[in-house]
Image (cartoon, rainbow, N blue to C red; front, side, top):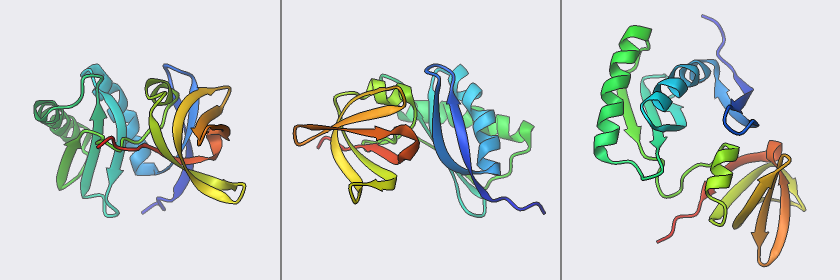
Length: 170
């Protein structure tokens, strides 16, 4: 069996021209290549894919501007079940879900869409001795994300972002 290691994948967002870093396995990369056009053609956005360490659980997060309903999850699940059978993708359990209130932001289009929202971000390399920040997402341009924290604007390089999530409004 070939070694399936973790590698840095540069994922190209066709709509916005942004290269976003993700750590994924070869197996998950293949899933993205199959899922992205399929889910987009169904009218949804592919937000994230999680696969258990043994690959038996597939968890796929989808979104659309008006939000995701149980019927949306069911429709995507039915479609993907047939697709996976044709593509010979083995799994025991398939979960289709909305990204939740703490939605993961990964693409330039996400940062634009959620501009003005409170986010929590984690950096790969620390900035001023800190890796975790919470602030209002102001803009993204020229490979820089601008975050307002306590009235100050901080700039973060996109290639240094490990994870960015919305902070839920409760």
